[in-house]
Image (cartoon, rainbow, N blue to C red):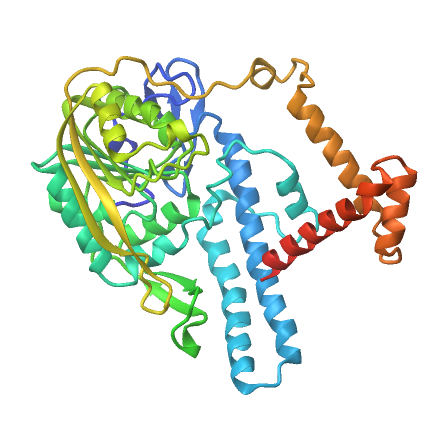
Length: 460
């Protein structure tokens, strides 16, 4: 059973410092400490927080959590404003339900995320600050990017979960003593596999605090109350559903949760008998060859890699958008013997309360580690001026272009005072030499249209 007081020894012998990537981690009270570089890592709500820069990542997740809570409160306020203007009874009922749902969701998420520390909300510039500044966290991995997975895993029924377990367990084959799930999300598949495999240790790793903190409570056998807001509600009452999520039973001993970046996975080489990557290679911004090398490093000789997902690679560069056969060739080139490949169609994200759903064809492959990968896995290294904050920041062509674009936009937006017309703005832009007269009107109008549209999407 996973509890906040689970002994640190549950991961003994597996952990390696994610910063120096050389020395083991030792228990130091409620923290872990690196025997080599001396870096300390806390536990958040009892879960090891094993990021290479733990304090910086914690601060960024607090910012994102604050932003999500503020978005819920803003959604409640917008529904309340529309309610005051609504005349139709059905519309009023829907808006009342939305306003109450978003308001309570803000409270529920604030309590759930309390282990992160106090969230900073109510700051007018919080959203602008988050949008303006860069982040160490993947921009595609926001707090609520995969929020619906919590409901899929623990509330929508067994169809998708059972089929996923059947496919993955079949690919895993014989019992594995130590199983790692990279990108475990809300942990239902890790939970089901831990039961089915009767593994001594199953480690579920994810980057997202909302998903793992919810999973932690569920795996203790506690309920978690959260709202679902379906995309296309089937009935009037489905617009904001207050769901009580529950696991079938408390997790068996040996299921461990870890906060970490999958590609700086804080584990010693050859720590696991099996590694599962469920719907991970399809979303992470790391090329597939590097992923294969990382998985190879984590597996003991003869250990098995099981991948489960659609193999839809998130890259603009055509060379990295591998087809199925290319991906399997890359697996083989990186020290694996491919044992089985299966394609199957299964329901995907089918909420019983929504008309919006789909079928997904997934590729499940099983590959055994036959030898070490031909290259050591690495993580993208920052440039020297980022690694050393005392170094001067070079004005690259990209930064110069961004600076000029930001300056022009800032000047234009500063002119918008609620009094000037579009013609007034165009005239000033031309007078200040920002744009030639023949281009100014369409450029100013286009910028304001884009920002208006972005605001409408955010408000909706």
